[in-house]
Amino acid sequence: MDGKLKSLYYEHLIKMVSKGTKINSGLRRFYIQHGSKEEVWKRLGLKESHNFQKKLDQLFPEEFRVEAGFLLFSEYSNHKKGIESQAILRQERLEAHILASQRTAHEHFKRKAGKNTRDRDKLRPLAKQSRGTQCPTCGVEMLTRGLFGLTIEHIVPVSYGGENSYDGEFPQCVGMCWLCNQTRNKIVLEIGQEKKRGRFKITDRAIRFLITQVHGKNEELDDQMSRLFWELHQLASSQNLPVEDYDLFGDGEYVEYKISQKETSTLLTSAISDDSGNEEIKPIYVELSKEEAIAKLREDLMSGIEDSIKNDKLYRIERLEKLFLKHGSIELFKQKIGMENLSINAILIRLYPNQFIIERKGTVQFIYSLGKEDYHFHNFAADVEVPALIEKKHEAQEDLDTNLPKPVSLPVLFARESMTALLNSFSHSRIPLESVTEALDDLRKEDGESWDAYFAKFGVKDGGTHAERIHMLLTECGFLCRIEREQKLHFIQFELPHSFE
Image (tube, one colour):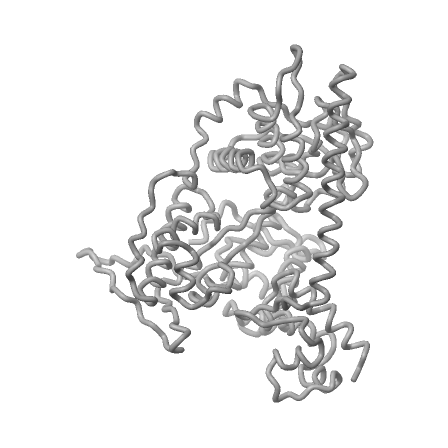
């Protein structure tokens, strides 16, 4: 057995688990780097006839398990135990950091010290290294301007003694998008401060929330503050508030925005989230058969996602709780379909393959529909395909289906997202061909395919220059663009905005 290859394989499998990579795509990447599948198995001393789980058990006993096309740690995994042990120690260090930050704020208040000043020169390197990274709160890619533009967040505000440091395991200053920065300010102003002896003091509760939201776990957050944060965040993002330009990287003055108490009150009175309704949900599906319950869940989920899109909002995974209440509870639904031990993510993948995408942004998960209405689901107990229960009654209209959007394939969806992110990173719509190629090359490598195979996914045939084939791929994805040449360089000129119709 090749011991070095075994170690590399183990490290690769751990990365697959941590990133939630599908088994097939994750292993293809390993084979590209270390030889064909047959060669790898031979060097590891494994038989090709054995299934993947058996191979894993032979190489790394009780470390991994296969579930719904993904790789997970087993309950006996030594690596998992080590991670859990480190997580416990980190949690203890985080708790000590929170208590120390609370004491520092108390001392600042007792000394009647004034507001600390922001050290722009000291923070400038942090701003540069944070550009283009993900916001630690909502997960959006932070650029240089706009609603999700990059700002420097003082976790404990300078008004209450916060400093300009960004070193250590739990830095006080972090890069954060403008919207999350402002929403956290609103939280402090509304329910995160108390008045003592004629002065305002930040509460221990607010300090804990502000630190935990960035450096802790979502389930450890203060329920009231977390709920209010996302209500305000969703309200502002749906209204697409205008944001003035600011400069963190050039010679301009560093800006960290403030918000008045009057504006806070105005926003709070209208912060009504479609996720926060208190209407009673009746268990109307309890008596349905397994197949009927599966069909109803898909129908309600599709409808909920469509309603969110109409309101320019994303469908948060927490909203599934309401859908499960129609079935009695999540536990009752799992028992009915015989999947008691599976997570919600795994259940959606098993029941409705290739119909939904679950994406994490920061600490929040969202569900997207791929719009494949004609897909059926499966009865896994009987291993048979189950057709749709009720055919929809078409209204007596001519050309009823002419305006329905066509289903979008995953390669097209991912290419659109990659190109949109690339466009957002430039201040203009004329992008160097090299940058476009690099973005698509990352997607190609994730699938472990040659350029010819990758182009074939979009219906782009052999022939023509590489630049022409890139242009054809973008056209197939719905972009209006053309190739331009300047001296020896090629550019893609996009015509914006595009609707992907």
